[in-house]
Image (cartoon, rainbow, N blue to C red):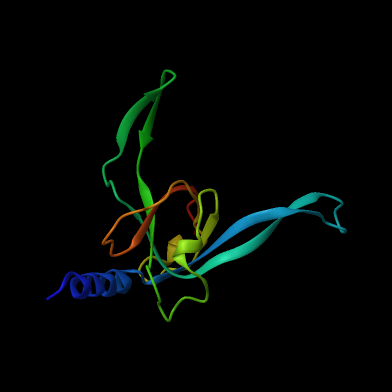
Amino acid sequence: MSVHDLLAAARALAGDLQQGTVRIRRKTGESKNPATGRIEPVWTDVYEGPGRVRQSNAQPRNVDAAGQRLAEQSPTVGLPIGDDPRIVTGSSADVRVDDVGTVLTNPEDPERVGQQFRIAGTHDQTHSSSRRLPVEVFNHGG
């Protein structure tokens, strides 16, 4: 079996784990809301399709930041690489740091629907089965 065939099989298996659906948006400007008079962000969808949010480090690491003890974890969102017929909008390659995502569906943990996260980093790796982007979760859904 060639490396190409192994990678295709690994991507198919990773895709099977991406059972939820996420939408990832990018702030593209601001606009005045005529009803409230407030300036509000304008968002553009850059990706909607399968995704998997997970803690890559199940055990939190205690850190001391400016005399304050914090528990640090490393959540990621896994998105398919290449074509996937379940992708509604864009491609995982379109996602950038500071884009904001929302879990739209999660059949294995419905309480995570509504969870929001910010893309905190990139994922550049040869022979990757999934695009695993580090995120900061700021709303746990439910």
